[in-house]
Length: 444
Image (cartoon, rainbow, N blue to C red; front, side):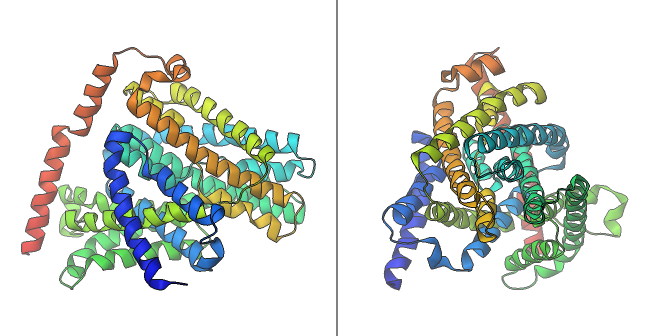
């Protein structure tokens, strides 16, 4: 192993990620796609590196990346936007999750003789969600309407939980040959509720303590340590650490609201400063860069038939999403934003990781489940990225979206609406207030 060469390549990769971000304004190609291709070329195609080189660090690395992405997104999410979006996000999650699960189950049980109904349901469930680690970086580049952005972020976080909880419960049923719906439902509500409570309590307490940590050198790293503790503790208790970290970030990002209540004298809460948010933003950028290359390296390729079925699944899922957007999203948005919400169905490492477990347990159909899952992950990211390119350049070019979603206004008006949303006076005022608070805290 040539260590100096590896370090040089890491540096070039970071430079490249910045370059890809800058080129997005002109090419509209998400850097997710470019980094994924780099991983595939250097990994499965050329064999320069493989998953085994990462050993046990690989799963830890992916968990840390997901944690940072969810926390950083939570700190930038305002309570008002959350309340506006939570209803739509919840309904979209349920509709798209179960519709996608039905599609995946039907394909698996129809075309594979060695996959029984329970195993097919397991496959359908693990590929039914959207990946937070893929969705959030893409929609950040697209500068969407705030509600659309928040809805997609929440949907990806909620569906990750459903994939994990239901997937693991079905896996246990596959091993034991016994399926209990009540245990799955109990696991879901407990995972959501207790993870929420841990994240909220942790954020509330830390918002009080954080003022005292700022007198220390390199205090921004203390926030990072607390994020890891919240995630690790929640996972250790058998709950969903991703939800806990997201709520922890939302609580810290909105801690300033307590200053407008009588509680401010008892609980002098402080939110994150702009320089602290910037620190996490840089961390997320670097970790995401390596994450997508790692996903490409981990890809496993099956037969042409496997990829044909995976393509059928991905296309069917994407065709259903616009219907759910039309039915469940009532807020007025530009056609472009509705289109982005309609095609945002990329899968991530959750199905890739869970799909590998049946093989480890020696369960029937395990190899086909794994290969089909990897194919769905790869094709979903590629197709989503291609559709993002098309929508970014000419939203009206995809006739199916136009027919399902409808189009009442000219595209120029939609773009003006989007621009005014992104550069609204409220956003500018909030940024000014945050900068002012940052300076005040620094002086203290």
